[in-house]
Structures are given as C-alpha cells and as structure tokens.
Image (cartoon, rainbow, N blue to C red):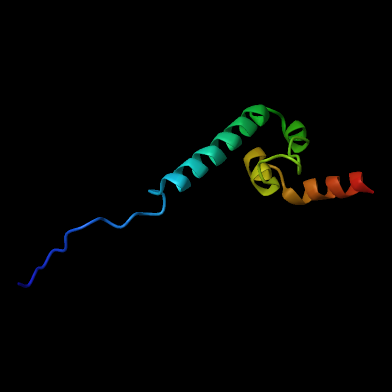
Length: 81
C-alpha cells in the first residue's frame, strides 16, 4: 500500500479551541467598543483618548487611534510628576 491514509481526529488549528475563540471574541469586542468612541475624531482629540488604565492595552489603543505611543507616554509621565 503506497498511499496509506490515516483516519482519526484532525489536528486543531490555533483558533479552533473554544477558550481561545471566546478570548479572541472578548478582546475584539473591547477593542470595538473603544474604537467606537474614537472614530471620526480629529487627530488632536484622538491624541487625548488613549488611557493607560483602560482594559485595552495602551499599545493597541494608540494603534487603533492612529497616534504615537511615545507621545502618550510623555503625557502620562508629565502628569505623574
């Protein structure tokens, strides 16, 4: 038999696990809620939206808002002094 096919359960891909799927859905829902409040805002206004205490990571907030993380870090550092 040259072409032997093995039967059985197919290996799960990265996102087939229920826990991972629900985790990804939750993360995307948080990001969508956060993005709804920043969309259609001018750049100067969007710059003030990222909040380090928010559930969405600061790096992701900056990426979604289209602002540089370094300027947010400077703002946070100045406020804490």
